[in-house]
Image (cartoon, rainbow, N blue to C red):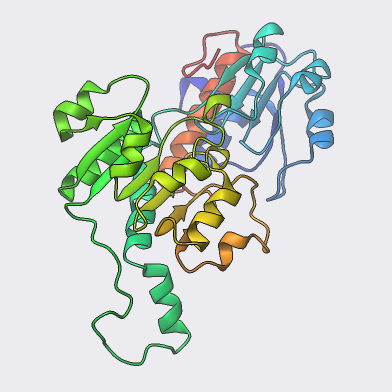
Length: 329
């Protein structure tokens, strides 16, 4: 049994958990706190979240839960916000810091799983796997012919990685296995990627003009919002494929639809969107040259379980007034 599963205080603290999480993490939470767990698949509305956390000392939340100054002001006993995700753009970290509330996330553990998903989107889009699946299931497959469902090669192509952090590095490792030329754009050089995979750092515009595949792995920040807009997409090759498994608002979704619809670029593989979940009338969904997934970058059983454990460990440390194992502030 984990050392975190006992609590030495005279009273168990109250915590709110905004969704059911994998059992290993939930066991840790139940062992140290009186946990109020939101039972629904959909996230609690903001007003409900504020109400449920009002008398809590801990909050374990997801990307779908907005944690801002107003919510914090209504929860004066709150000591820790533990996010079950790497990104935390839904949390006003400065507001938390100003109120002495610790914030934690779950970095590192989902790196390779997310890189797998990014490369799966790249391959599925390039080789028209989803489109081919629809053709077979609908009975439209009539014969073998030379150009039927012909896609583009991945091996020996050029991949441009926007953001050479942990996930970008792992995507580069996978690309290296396909003997791809690896380019990247980042504020800082990544010497390990350059040494291990022969990666070459370029300005973003040059990377876009040169790459057969462009895959995004940069955090969502004010300066990266709509980093990929009409101008940037117009710099890409007409056969190029864009992959986004980072955050939806990094790509201007309307500009992307226009570029795909007019043949400015060849295709896109998307795990994230500007608005999630995606409405059924989203124009991108009508295009054959787009492969979509419902934000499943970290969605393997092993990875989600480990994320839950890390989030629980962050929560417990915050309740005890200890440094968080993975603290943001």
